[in-house]
Image (tube, rainbow, N blue to C red; front, side, top):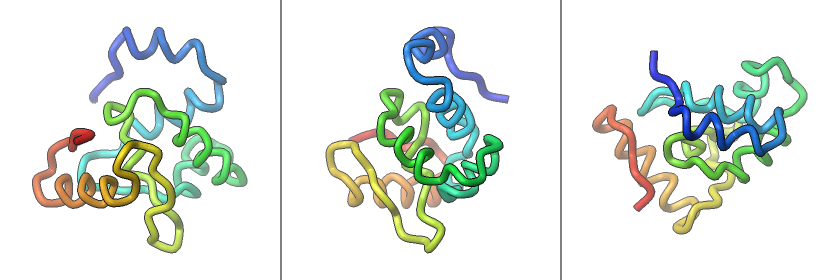
Amino acid sequence: MKKLSKEILEKMKNYPPFYVKVWKECFNIPAGKTLTYLQLAKKIGAPKAARAVGTALSKNPFAPVVPCHRVIRTDGKMGGFSAKGGIKLKLKMLDYEKRTGKNAKLS
């Protein structure tokens, strides 16, 4: 099982506990797979917090280690992506991961 580095875990202490919970669960989404904001909310025990999950992911300073690009809307649309390059980059990263099974980089 993969683990977040001690450095990232230490930095996470400076953020709201809800954000940290979202980011830790998001970290577990394998390359080439996606979850919806609602599925992620349910996984952290907050099934009515899909929008709050989106907010937490929009504040993710640990991308792409915490792969927020792997979270999409329930209707299959991409939702947001705050990294430079926006949705086009998110689609490119997801495509790369689906084809290769490897983690994409922000570029």
